Structures are given as structure tokens and as C-alpha cells.
Image 1: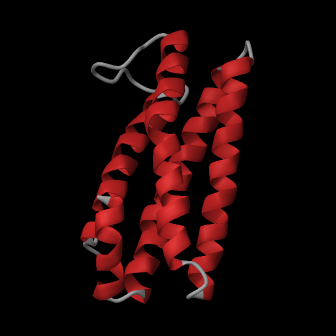
Image 2: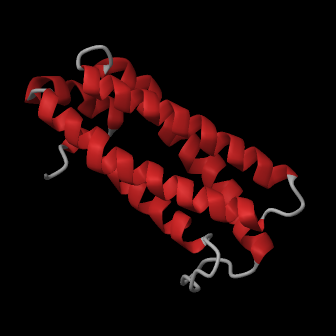
Length: 145
């Protein structure tokens, strides 16, 4: 399904998140312009998280979910899953920041982030577009663009 315009920015950010998720997994091939050493990957991941993902999570929680929650039971379950996964990803980043042996944590973060993004794109956003009419989705445009 084509992504509705109020969700396009979040979907584009998901694309960037998927690139991060792929390149920090164990055995990942080098990505052009990305660090190749473990410490570089760690620093890039933390910076990406702090500069992009925190705002992305806030927008999903404080705009998208706050506007659309409690209107569809299936969607509410997906929002609950989204929140749990945001908490898990934040916890992993904190461990990556503090643990000396962080290679496995980077790998775990990569897989968790990929799974999270796929759920949002394939289930959450699809359900939003099925449940809500154009008028409701139009009200999100200015907030999410």
C-alpha cells in the first residue's frame, strides 16, 4: 500500500534506520561512508540514536499514538508493542554506551531495530491507513511533516 503523506517522513526515517541496522550486524559488509571498525560503529550508532531516533520515537509516541490510540483494538496492541520495543531499544543503547564488550550488543540492537521497523511499516502503518479516513490522516500532516 502506498504510504499516506502524513506518514512519509516517518517511513523515510525508517529507511535510514534500516541502513544502520544492517551495517552494525556481525559480518555485515562495509557500507560506503560508514565506519568499518567496531568503535566507529558504536559511536555512529549512539550518535544516530541521539540525533535521529529519539525524536523519531517521540513523534511516534507523542503525535501518532497520542492522536490515534483508543480507536481500534488491533491498532492499540500494535502501539503497545511499539512502546515496548522503543523501551528495549533505549535500554540496548544504554548498554552499548556503558559495556566494554559491546559487539554482541550492537548486533542485537541491529536485529531489534530491523524487526521494530518492519513491524511498524508492515503492520502499524498499514493498519493506520486501513482504519482512518483521509480527514483524520490529514490532521496529522502538519504535525508529522
